[in-house]
Amino acid sequence: MAETTGLNHLGLAVKDLDRTTDFFTGVLGWEEQARDESYPRNSVTDGKLRLTLWQVDHAGLVNDFDRRANIGLHHLALGVQSEEDLTRLAQRVKDFPGVVIEFMPETVGKGPRKHMMFSEPGGIRLELIWQGA
Image: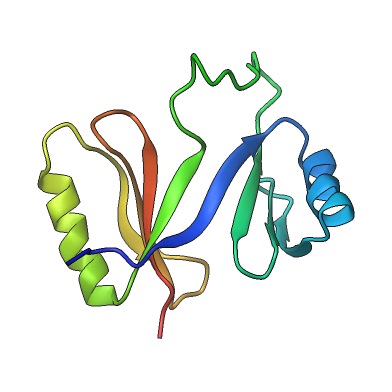
């Protein structure tokens, strides 16, 4: 039986947050959900799928995506059913050889949501997230 509950959201690193947001909302009719200028990031949805768009840092060299040269996306978030499942899976993830933990489960904002971030052995950045009670 699978330990995760499907796609929670897909995080994409984008070159221009405003242009990408405008494309999804203006061209595709998606709805803007949650903008945070301090990061900066924005969430957009079509009512079924949610994308979190993350502005890349232009202070350094920014490389365009190259499907033949880049590994993965910003991150892939996978939902879990309970806080207990998150805690249990976090330990299993931590103990798996080659995993690099970014942070163990912690509260998102003011909670009750909790999440953790890590890179799997192949270098893909993943998030496990419990949506809260």
